[in-house]
Length: 205
Image (tube, rainbow, N blue to C red; front, side):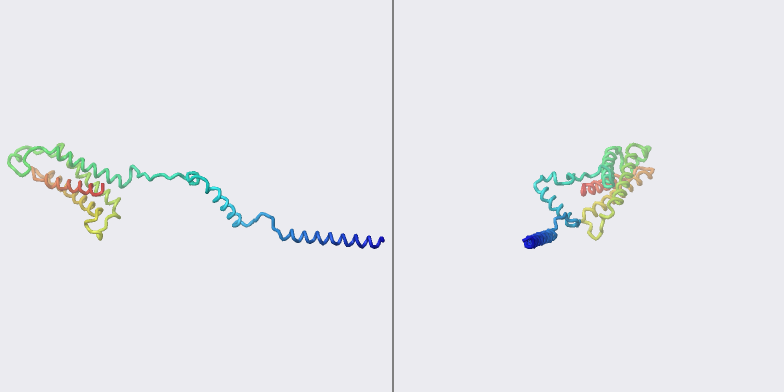
């Protein structure tokens, strides 16, 4: 009896050992550890973020608020623009300050001392100098906008040509009048230059 009981006990222990080994083997096949691969971890995090941010308002999901573009107050283009407007103001002031008298080479005007440093002359010189400055700043800041292959009808090309021609005519008129001992006809040339400058400004602004 004791031998049979011993055999049954051995069989029972052997069965329990087999059952334990089988359970351990099945447990070994299941990988319950947290994945250590960075790619898998990042994909889990991305999926989690997308799901969480889907229900948030747009203002909360955007990293930074949208700011409208504001043109700077001072730039090369602004300097050119301000110089052009100043030139036109000086042209108008010069025209209104012109003295009454003979515009051509007449005897009555030649007998009177000629004002070459008066208000009209100073304004004319300032207008011519500002016109030259306007053209210079325009060529520096907008040189890449001027293309002859686009033809003279192109607004940028026409603006540059009219502005340059207007400045040249104004400087010629001022030089012609300032270097003459007697009154000479120069108003028409100066006015044509002023109109050319004004039309050039109108094309772009």
